[in-house]
Length: 379
Length: 140
Ligand SMILES: [Zn+2]
Image (cartoon, rainbow over all chains, first blue to last red; front, side, top):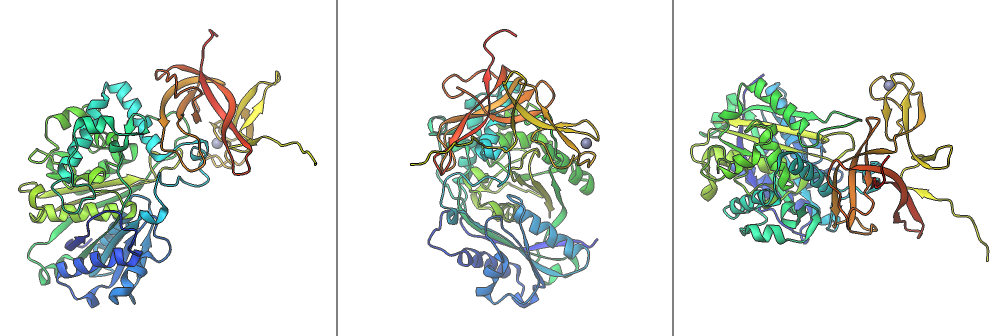
């Protein structure tokens, strides 16, 4: 396996852009990543594009206005992990020697869907009796609160932290802090969640340029290295299951820590999949940042906030930065690349050398989640 | 004007049966290969790949594992409504609406029992029925 570097990263501000067509949402991020990388667009040998709701040929539609088609375009759908799945495939293609320079795109335009709760998985028996994504996470939250004594005020502090970080991020959909009182009083979505415990829907695109280690010096003096990129899917369980444990994340984290030799204590900055407030707490535990049941103490200690021991979701996370589903994995990777280069502005985690991204999702009955992708980057 | 009998529509085809006394039962699959009991009945067992799956009436009682009162519902669904995971006494977990869960939310782990009721009204104006669970009130 060859070493692989990230040499270009770009994204636009996540938000609601109903006036933009899909390709016009996407190409500015690609142009930005190509220019950031210092490569000629003709040097890109293949493109991996992740999108969950973009429909057919998402990658080609984004590349066409830039005159960049004519190379293999691999379109990847893996729900919330689509962008991260595309990134992993691109990484492996270079590591295994198939290509030297490739482009990764993550994109989704959720305003195309008309708003409201995202449609559930068709033909899913839990969806057919009324399960929604917020309700699934709300059930995790209620069970977690029951077993570990977490209060709704404590749960709400996750959203307060996310919005505090998002206020420092010019790429975030929400850039206004919120108070605990505002989170507690927001209109109910799926109890115990109100609106501010749930990520918004929005539109976004992010892009990265990857290259083989032996050509990285041609383009940059600040490569960010890919230590490992893990992907797994949920196991099908038909009986009782502990929904307060993020099984797929815990298993994926174990695999990538073993593969890379990195331990949770080595991670300087992390972007985790906080689609709902409870998720961030569950993922602290599943990623090994703290013990089971102790996630709130970690949050309360300030360790996961700006200036803390292991800042989590400095970008504002999905709760504040936004969650254009298939773009999210790529957007998390762009954020961590910027953090490791020291380019994250007011939200910079000082001296960060090892970064982790984690995204997981895709409600499918009987599985913890459909897919989970975890990546570790370092300088 | 002609009249016709409207057969009940179920949210999940084949999921509701009845016992000898005519009481509703939730039907699952019993694997002839390995004995796994699964809801809903699969066409193939994910453990042993046996395609011989018998209809089996699942336990009518269980405990409330978790639930949520849903306010932001999908189009065409009356809200708010309560949706739950129920752990049945025979080891099967089912997702089901929780009867009266909006007005009288029970504590987690409360004993619950099966009923059949209206889930929603479909585009033809016909009631769609499903399994539901309600807190057990009387002693067993
Ligand atoms: Zn079997």
